[in-house]
Length: 136
Image (cartoon, rainbow, N blue to C red):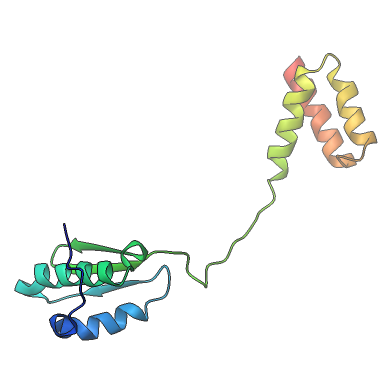
């Protein structure tokens, strides 16, 4: 689809309120425009055209769902939080158990983990118990 190369402000007067709200949209936020009726296609076209003319088209995604026009601002929300969780101890013990099984002397490997303080006494006992179950 080709867009005009010159900006004509009068053309966008009918969607001026939408454009104002669009500019205030935070990254990651969405705006739903309802009850457009017959003007749904025209409004969508004007929005695409305005975004192309202002070089903002890559920052927004526009889609039609039923009779609603949904505009999504791309990007990560400033209120997004990142939480890094440690792997559960069972996952770590399972990794060490697999390595112990692959070793020539698995019990020696487990004792080395304990000596290097990679595991505590409780984990050591649990790892030995699981190793013995597997190697029977």
